[in-house]
Image 1 (cartoon, one colour):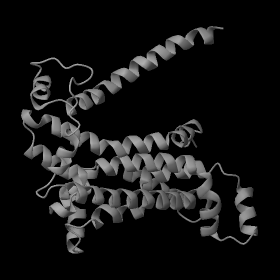
Image 2: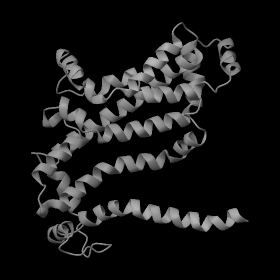
Image 3: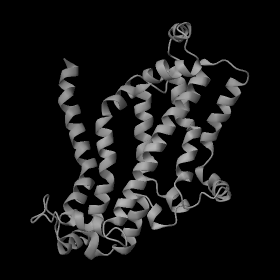
Image 4: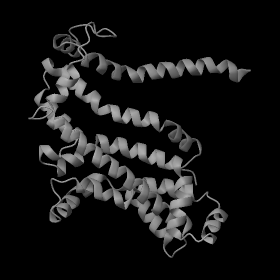
Length: 287
C-alpha cells in the first residue's frame, strides 16, 4: 500500500525534473522560430519570450542551413556528409573492436591476461590532452592531416571503458554455451561473431549511443586535424557559423542551426532507448 501511495509523488518529481531539463531545449526552439528583433530581445532579457512564438518563422531553418558555408547549402551538405561518415564508421569500429577485445579478456586464457587488462584499465586514467601532440605528429608523418582518417582509425583499436564493459558482461556468459559452439565447428572468431556479439546487444546499444553522441558533437578532434571547409564536420561548421553570425540580429539563425545538429542524437537515443535501459538494468558493468 505504501508503495502505491508513493507513486504519485515519484511521478510528480519525474515530471518536474523533465520540465526543468527540457526547458532550455524548448527555449532554443522558440528563439529559433522568432523574428530577429524578438529573438535578440529575448536573449538580452530586454523583452519577454512567450512559450510559443507569436508568428513562427519556419524559413529561419533553411536560411540558417543555406548560410552555413561560403557556398549556399554546400557547406552544410559537406559538413553533414563528413559527420555521417565519421560517426558511422567510428561507432561500428568501436563496437566491433571493443567487443572482440572484451571477449578475449573474458574467455581466452593466455599468459599476461590479467596484467594486460590492468594496463588497459590504467589508460583510462590518462587525460586525452596528453596524447594530442604525439598523435598529431604521428598523423602528420602519415600524411593524414586534413583528412578524416585521424578521426576514424583510432576507433579500430577499441575504447578502454567499453572494453571493460564488454569484458564484465561476457564473463557472465556460460562457458557451456561457448563450448557447444566450438563443438559445432566454430573457431574463436566464429564464436565471437555468432554467439557472443548477439548476446551483448544491450552493451552494444550503450556503446553505440555514447560513441555516437561523443563523435557527433566532437569539436576538438576535427578542429585539430581538419583545416579545409570541405573536410569539416558539423561541429566545426557550426562554430564557424557562430563566429560569422554570432550577433544578436542573427541569434535566431544560430539557434536553428544548433537544433538541426542535435536532431540525430535525439532520434538515435529514442530508437535505442529500450536496449539502452535493458543494458543498464542487467548491470552490464558489474563483475
